[in-house]
Length: 115
Length: 112
Image (cartoon, rainbow over all chains, first blue to last red; front, side, top):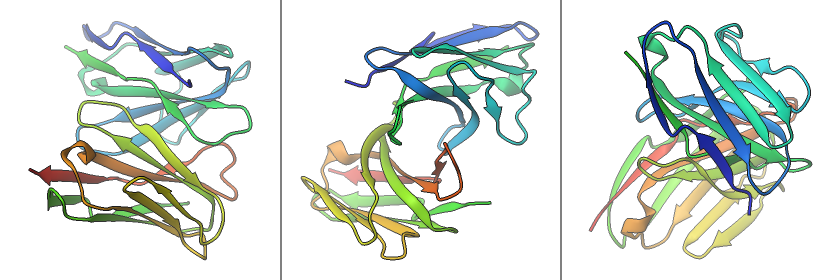
């Protein structure tokens, strides 16, 4: 149980284009989802927290107009990287949490490369 | 703000040796979680500790939560090559509402 999927697993895009990443909880309802960014051999950097039906809460330094997060249902959250630049290239991972519990279940991640 | 630190950053052990990673928070925690991330993979939840002084075991892994609820440790007995990966602790502060703060992780290499 508690499986989270992410799509796509990798994407290459040109500078200036937008990319949408989907995060789905497959066998549970995720009241809260998190979006992280991870650089090679580094820890997880929390970008934003999203609760179903409400606006995402962004961490300090994360541009909300650049990283659009939508948590439209209890099983789906999306992250759109708008006007991507090479410095946005990274590993993006989502996680989901079940209501009333604190552990997080992570998706497999999306490797974004902006050329 | 709340900070979570982990030591060591890297650890190389011979297969069969024991391994310990330590996690320290700048503030008192409500609970602490441990995750493992294999190379090229994503973090996988291992365990959550809630009570002061709590000790939990999972086969060769022993997790402890400090009495003051500001530190924790993960000890692996007789490491195996399957233990390779990065171990992250993540602390939920008493005033941090929804989010946990991840430590920088300890990367474990096991030499066969």
